[in-house]
Amino acid sequence: MSLFNSRFYDFNVHKDSTSITELAFGAKKYGYCGIAIVNSAITNEDKLPEDFSIYGSVEISGKPSKLREEIKKHKGTDAILTVIGGDEELNRAAVETEGLDILLQPAQFNNVLAKAASDNSVAIGFNLGSLVRLRGEARVRELMIMRENLKHARKYDLRMILTGTARSIYDFRSPREMAAIAGIFGMTKEEAVDAMSAAPLEILRRKNPDYIQEGIEIL
Image (cartoon, rainbow, N blue to C red; front, side, top):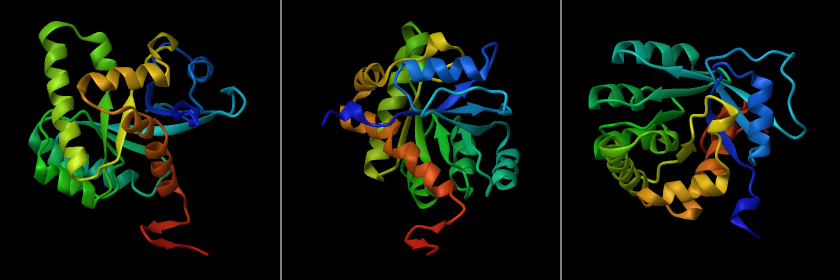
């Protein structure tokens, strides 16, 4: 069976001038079965294609103390919690606070932070949209960050998440294209597929009200 027969998700989609309905149908066209909409209310008026799911996502930014407060405030909800990575102090606050789902594109990441992320089941996100949009030295810097983060993710067996950070239907890339872009910084095709299918599904599983902690379930 082809790797690309999996069910794919993008957990960092932004509703700017495009409606949630348009984003959903656009994502479906490109081969996704679900997306998470960042910091936007989802209503019953939003029409979805058949066999497609929309999830709520809270993107948290700010000083380390604020990050901790916001993560704790939203912990236990069904919102997918994402922190936009930054310097070491910010990243440490993020991965050491239980309840965070994704640390996206941390600029300064190391073995200590990777171990904390592993202990708290935080996935590391790779923003492929930045590679598409940036040029020259800025793109080279992003590639270097991704290669370093991939190294730490592999060493500590962290879940990895791929996103295109789409802000319109024109920003979506098919899962095959996403995997090809991820290959530029060394991610294997299998890792890329997992980062768009199994890893998002694991985050959703942990959001289930019956989930208590790893190895324990309600019968």
